[in-house]
Every structure is written in C-alpha cells, then in structure tokens.
Length: 504
Image 1 (cartoon, rainbow, N blue to C red):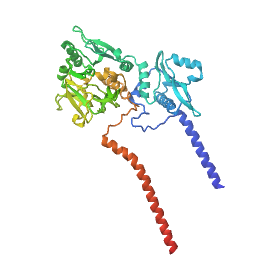
Image 2 (tube, rainbow, N blue to C red):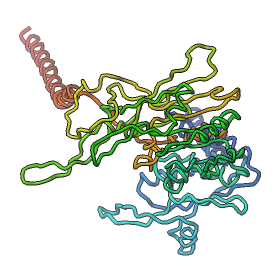
Image 3 (cartoon, one colour):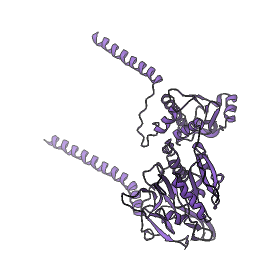
Image 4 (cartoon, rainbow, N blue to C red):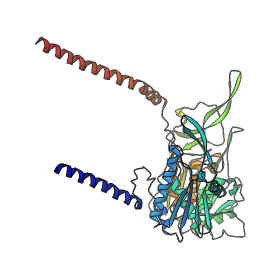
C-alpha cells in the first residue's frame, strides 16, 4: 500500500513539474547556443539598437503554413529570433505571424507591401506539386516602414532584421563620399553595394574641384577603380581630408588585364606614388594563385568546337584573411588581376601608423611582372607558384597625414568591386565591411556575414585525392572482411572447446 502511495506521489510530482515548466516557458525563453559563430545569440550591436528604440517596432511576418521541413525551419528560426528581440527590448519589439494563404485579402495586403510569393515544391502522398509560399516581413515604426521581401533560408537573419530596425529608427546617417571624375563607376552601377550602404549611410557622389574643399559632412570617402590620372590638386585635397581625421577606402588597379587581347599592362593614376609617400607600395605585377577562378575558352574536340572552363591563376580566389572587423566572416573573395602590396614604412614601435595585412594570397602563389601576355592554355605547375601569403589588402591606422588619427583601407584591386565579382557574395561584403569599419560605430559590421554557410572546399593535392578515394572504397571492405575473420575465429575457438569438453 505504501509503495503504491509513493508511486502516485512521484507521478503527481512529475506531472506538476511538467505543467509548471510549460507555463514558465510561455513567459520565459531560454535557448543554449552551441553554434561556432553564436548564430542564435543576439550581438551587442543588436542590443544597442534595441536599447535606443524611442518607439515600439511592429514586425508583421507573412509566412505560409505546411511548408517542407527545410523551409518551415526558416519560419521557426525567424520566430525564435523575434522572441529574443522582444525579450531584449522589453517588448519594444512586438510581432505577429499571419498566413496569407488563408485569406485572399491578407495575401493581397502582403503583395501590396512588397512581399511576393515564391513557388516551392511540396510532396503530398508521393506526388509533388508546387505551392505559393510567403516568407517575408514588414517592419514598422510610426510612419516609417521597411520590408523584408524574402527571408532567405540560411542567410544572416539577425543582420537583416537589425539593419532594417536601425534604418527606420536612425535620425542622422553619416555621409559617405563616392569619388567621381577620374573614370570611377557611379554608385548606380553598383546596385548591391548601394543597397547595403543606404541602410546606415547617405552615400553621395563627390566630384573634387580646384576651388572647393571636401565638405566636412563626409566622414569617409571611397575611391573605387579610377582609370584616369588624378591631378595633384585632388590628391592634396585627400591629404587635407586625412589631416582633419577623415577616413579613406582605396581600391584601385596598379595593373589591368585584357582577356580579349590576352594582354596586361601597368596603369598610372597618381595614386601609386601618393600611397608610396604614406609607406604603402603597390607593385607593378600580377598575382597568380593556384586557388583561382576559371575562364571560358573554345577548344577543338574532334570535329566539334566546345566551350570549356579553364583555371586562370590571374583570377585569385582569396580565402586567407586576418582576424579583423573588415574581414570578419569572409570566406572567399575573387580578385581579378590583383597586385601585391608591401609596407615600406618604419616597423619600430615609434611609428605612429599601424599597418595590418587584411587579405593574402594562398600558400601556392606567385607574381608576373607587367606588362605581360596571357597564355590561357598554359599548363600550370607547382613551380609557377613559388611564393605564399602575398599581401593584397591592408588597413592603416594612426597619424597617416598630419597629427590627427585617421584610418585607411587599401585594396590592390579595383576590379573586385566593380566587375562581375563585385555584384554579389563576399566581394560586396569586403567593400561594405571596409566602409563600415571606417565609418560605423554601431557594430553591425560583425553581423553582415553571420550565418553565411557557403564554405568552399579545401584544395588538396592529387595524391591526397587518390588516397581518400581508395580509402573510401577499401576501408569498408576490409572492415567487413576483418569482422568476418574475427567472428569465424571466435566460433572456431568455441567449437574446439566444446569438442575437447565432449572428449573429456
């Protein structure tokens, strides 16, 4: 009887604990984050943004129901993220989830707000059909409104949410000057870069004149891929800008490659000598790297002419980055026709300028002096890559000009920001991260690449590839054979032992 009573009490206690835990979980949210990049933990930058909210922010999430598990997980992650935002902001962030597929009026409302449905494949009873799915959100603060048209699965969700909240809550945005007048691309030709910059800044095109100074409203100036000579008077204005504490991002070409004519040459804009006076020497060379992109060439195969992708070491894929805010979270940046750079300033402790290499070539790289002809069909060997970790981008901090602290980011390639590679991926992140580091004090720079899952495969030698291939093929067979031999020996030993006992 006593045993039954104890059993009833134990069951009642367990049920009671479960009920209390369930009730507490509705009011309190706890999640342990064991991911490498703390993907599910709000950053200090987000907490600062939420602390500064003067009015409540409403997030209306338009998400469809009954989606495939991999897409439904995006909704779950987004909901968990909003719970964190609500708790951290003391409920200054409120949210609701609606299913546009349930009501034609709600669906129309979502589309009018800029959230368009996407088609996803849904499996139902061994049949695959397509369904219109909504995965977007509208963020409102007073009369201000921002839209997340599509929550990309696996993307930097916290960055998207925090930057949109910052965008509608920010009062004054720093002005960024995009230098023009020397062959630089306009901001309109860099749509992804412009979209990122407009979140936190007011980017404006800046044309220098001989009679006016750089306006004091600019905190940072970006000089991207000039092709014409820059007059000394304009370089003097950049010096004056640094002297008063302004910051400069400089991405320019020391050499230029022409694939049509398979020829590369030196470019002189005046920036090379201006930069050399500050201790940074950009070499007249092409960096070649075993880790590289490919170009399409036409090859004759029998009677047919085929388009074939051929590795082209003049297009290095850079994956060696320093631990620095500018390169945090970057995984791969393609730098076409990049040059190497070196610091020629003083290395002793009395130097007031700190030089930090941000990106370097791989362990199998080399240089080709300009001018040069490109042999696209060349069979590259290890002997063509005798060098390693050549600096390709760097950061300078200190009294670069005059006695006022200033910062610069120098990238020895203008094409990475303006050509095909500059329209997406980590190329854009490197450029915008650089401007963030020079201009921003919110810390959002650390979030841009948070949650990025693209990880290029590590390059291995052919011998290693063969070893891995044969190991994958033979090891399972050897394990099965070994297990069979051991099992056979064990049974044989048992049988012999039984026979000995029978004779005994």
